[in-house]
Structures are given as C-alpha cells and as structure tokens.
Length: 312
Image 1: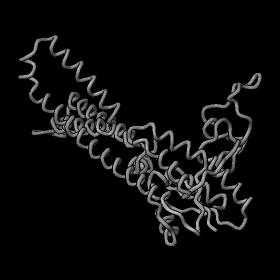
Image 2: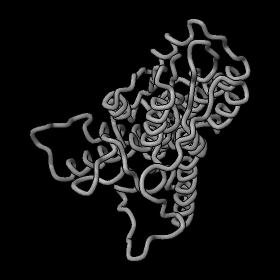
Image 3: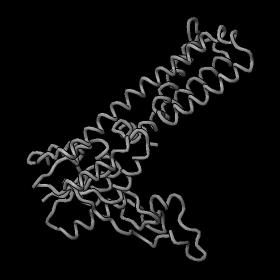
Image 4: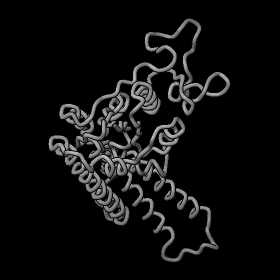
C-alpha cells in the first residue's frame, strides 16, 4: 500500500488530487496542512473553497486527516516560563538553529505552533514507524519541502506525477469533483476580472493624465481635491478587493510613464537628472505593481508558481 501525504502546494496547484478513491493508495492530509488551507480561504483570490473541498473529500472518503500532535518543547500559549523571553521570531517559525539545537532540516525540536512543513514530516515519520510495510510518499511542489523529505528517506512526487500514478485504478467521486470544478471556475474568473480591472484602471489613469488640462479647466480647486480624494478611495478599494487587478494597473501605469519619458526623442547619451528620476519612479511603480499582483494571486496555482520563482 502506498500512503500519499499531501501538502498545501499540491492541493492548491492540483485540487483534483483529492477527488478520487484508489484501492492502491491511501491519501492523507496532515491537520496542520488543513489549517493552512483554511487560512488561505480568508484571501479574496481563494474563493473560500479550500475548506469546503477538504470537508467534501472527508465526507466522501477520498482522504483522511493525519494528526500531527505536539512537536518539540512545551507550548508557550499559557504563558512564558519564569525568566524566559520566549522564542525569537525565527525560532517561532523555523525552530532553533546554531549550537543550541538542530535546525528543521534535521528534525526538529520546534518552538510554538507547529509549522506545516514540520508537522507534515513529523506525521510522515510517525507513519513510517507505525506502518513499516507502506511506502510513504510526500506529494508537493515546494522544493524546500521536497529536499527535506528526501533527506529523511521519504519518496517525493509532484502532483501530476501522483495523479498519473494513483488514478490508473481510481474511481472519481462526483461530489468532490464538483468542488474542484468550482475552484477552477472561480480562479479563471478571478484572473480574468483582475486583468480587465487592471487594464481599465490603467487606461482611465492615462486618459486622465493625457487630458488633464481640459479636465482641470472644468473644475475649481476644491472640485479637483474632491475628485482626487474619491479616486484615492476607489483605488484603495480596488487594492483591497482586487489586489491583482490593482497590481496589473500599476505595472501598466509605470510602463506608460516610462514610455512618455523616453518617446519620441530620447537620447541615452544625454540623460539629465529629471529624466533619471522619472525613469526610476516608473520602475518603482512597476516593481510595486508586480508585488501587489503576486499578493493578489496568493492561494491560486498562478500565485504558487510565482512564489517558486520569486519567494516572498
């Protein structure tokens, strides 16, 4: 029997990993991974569908929850020991390092709440000890997780490799497949609306700038201030609810600003300080836009692929 342990990256990239039963495979999601997926549901880009996906998969019997239990020294949630200042922020997330203790690559002690990668590997170790005849395989797209799992002797598979291997004798479960399809439709809609919203915001900003003279001629000073304030509120709302759209708009505005500086008679050999500052400002706006786009796509396959190349 093969026991596949899924991490959050596998489910985000391929929600269909939870949508079938196989007589040759036992599919488990550690409880810390479930908690992480439920936290993703708070993001506008997720559609609040990962929690329902796990619930539907559990009720349909396509997967089970793996309890990780406490790991490492005592939990400090009830208060710090006398004279203790508690873990450092790095230790809180990653465990102790240096001469005082091993790091998480070598297998824990761990301070504070269990991190998903630590909890997953702790569960895998427990399963290997309890079920020595099973093949324990970690399904992940996270390269750091894959390295840690291999270092501890576990098999590693990417989500598509897992699907190709496990689905050969599998039975699809329509109740779970329905939620998987909902996630796919929501993410496609989210990306399309983000692209349209960002393009519309960028076009509107550039048109306002291009026709700023006639626009300002029709308003007095207080009218101009009011319009700017309303525009700021509207853009902040766009950033709050459609951050990817806001980010794409920033990229387009920054690119348009650079083009206006460079065209039509730019001479690279005679760049003055004002031109340099304008180009730097345009570059800064584009970098901020890419950062907002990445944060707006968190909780989606695109967001995870982005983080593989550009870690936060």
